[in-house]
Length: 264
Image (tube, rainbow, N blue to C red; front, top):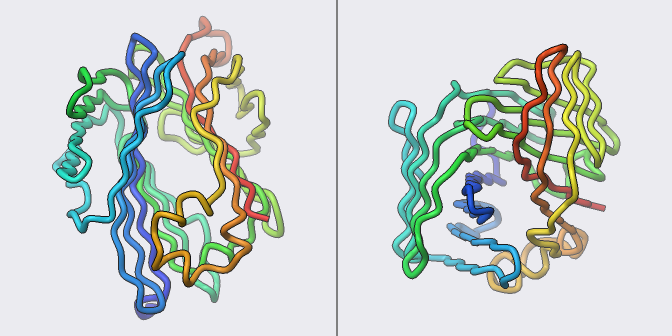
């Protein structure tokens, strides 16, 4: 077994899309590296035609709590809480295991009934998703040039498709349909093909487009130690309607949150 890595990043991600089109994305992350030990929380509310409501905090708060098929996240510093009730069992995968470290990913709730509450905003209720990832090596050493990630959920919150696509020195693709890994999958900017299943993504609504330098600017200890190359990382996240066609079954409507991250 490896000793505790000198670089240790744990990141939780949550989302929820309500029937009225509002979307919420939340993060809880902790980092330990080169004498830096910090916790960061963020929540963003997106509503078509309005600027996003964004809250961030460096207050040290406990990570989300897993209780059976429920995940509970309370962030007093963000005046925010989330209740996530998984409708499918977790998916777990070691994405990378090399001399430099490991990357462990776990979709705690591939599809869930989610309730987000933010002070001053009416509750956001709908289908959602939750995952956590542990990265035990400096992010800039990952063999990735581009990362495509996304999740599609049906309107009834009973089905899920999750994808991770790495491009670069070690290209790899993972697609999970209702929790099951599907080999020989193909991920593009317009959709996913895996076995007899396809997802066609509709028009993209940009949720955010930013460089990591914008996030790091609010975290002085982090900006002081990360290399300039990682500050240039660009991430764009979208919301799209998506249609699932699974073999000869009737097509199913749903929604996708997906992203493209360019690391170098």
